[in-house]
Image (cartoon, rainbow, N blue to C red; front, top):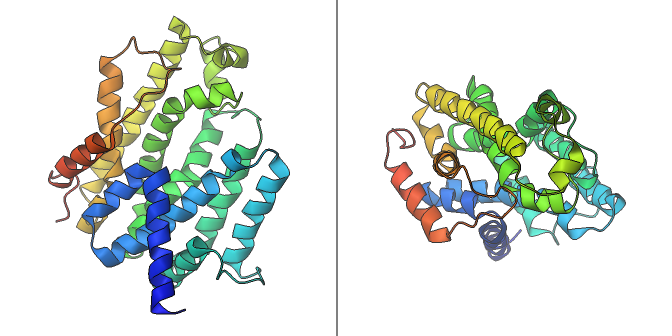
Length: 288
């Protein structure tokens, strides 16, 4: 691959993440350029996989796209990746930083759930789903920054759950509109709720109480992650920067208890950059 082609592929990944996952894109502005390029290839791959549900009308084409990524990572794709800048960049990152391919393929496998409207059955299932998707991203990003370090997976798992639970709540308007349920059925049952009450998109007191419990769990995972980060290698902390946005949004949600959870809550990109800039200078996220 020529230097020009590689540079073009890297720019494509950066643009893709900037457009579809601005939180993670903005967090990479606070790391060294060579690390930033690797992180953006990982995050661009995640964008490609997580957007499949949005660009296909039926599960089968989505399954085929996921299988292509699976085959590409395991060396079974015979057509090459020259026409796919994200795949080309990701494979370079996998080789350079010795990323475990099985973590990437498990992430792909977990996102098969997105293609169907089967409900998330239990909190344990949600834990596994978020751990192997968002948690895996934190773990792989940490490996890019500091290499293979013991106990990083545990920290990354809790980081993924904190971020993922809050994202689940933020995505409730979209998911309810397409009758997709990531809120576990056992949690709904504990509050005396059924799926149709969620799909009705009415902010009842019972739904507010259920979401408050979810936010409480996100808070616990966030606090535990930041506690673990105090003992982790200092280089890991910039990778955790997206959690500053989780912290901010939790505080806002706790203050706005009457906000309608079925109305999208928009955030300005400037506010995101400001929050991350301030966090990057704080002891909790500053590289030491």
